[in-house]
Image (cartoon, rainbow, N blue to C red; front, top):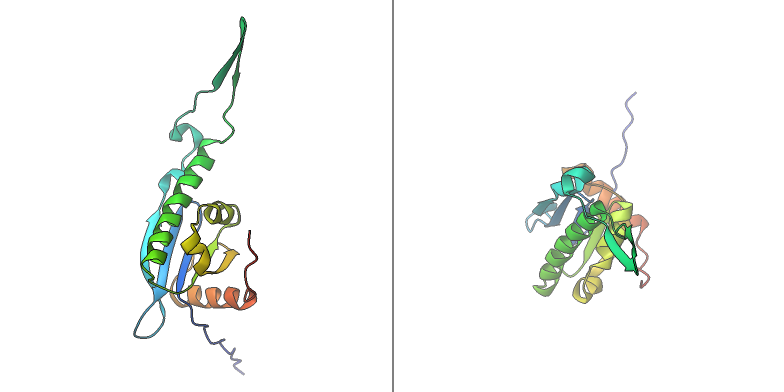
Length: 163
């Protein structure tokens, strides 16, 4: 006997950003069939490099009389690269928000990167933010991605609390 599983209907969405620290994709609904259509793809290869390949920040120095000491920077190079990529994505979302390309946007990003990205969002984008979910969906494509987005949006249908 063959069993079938009912597929949940996909909830309508507007703009969706799926991201992690090294890759991101921006989607919008296709005007013909309302399926997710990739609008832009972003790759940040520096996020995957080892610290030595990124370069080396020389430690700063502090002087007090005859003595001096070296201190390490507060932010390591990988964190700087993540922040740079988050700024790039936030800038693109800001442009889309100002152009009023869509009335709402949902962001799905890996846990530490989501906080970095949200920190760089401007006021126009924050007003459109429907959901910000700590979930890395960058490995999924097509209908699997659509269903995972729909499921996550159904679970997080409560309004966002202000930061």
